[in-house]
Length: 159
Image (tube, rainbow, N blue to C red; front, side):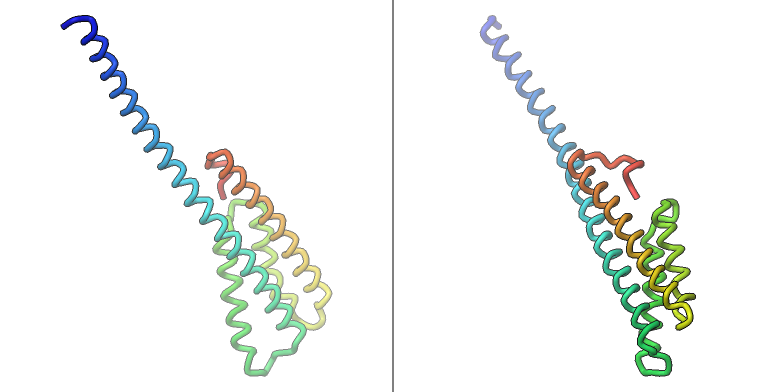
């Protein structure tokens, strides 16, 4: 084998090795990107569900407390939905996260404030629930943006 054939053989081998390396690298990068996109999409959906559930909970609680539904046909349905929302919101929260624990505590406290003698306390608690939820949603949104930009789903960034 002469020098020209050896150079061609080395060039072909290097091209093959480089092609295999590129293939493996692209596969791993695509897999990572797909995972990050899936997690980001799920987080965005979770944020929207929390937003909708807390909004609905606050609205129904306000309606229940200020519309005097007791004894009316709608009473059972409103109470049923409120109970379901209370539980589903708490199930969507992270029990190890401080803002989530505050929201959960407010969700537990608010039903005790629906009596007409506690309307001012109820209004304050509903405002506080909204404020705490807004802060939590903002923090989570910032995590989503950071993760999608950096492509890093570290444990300290996740919920």
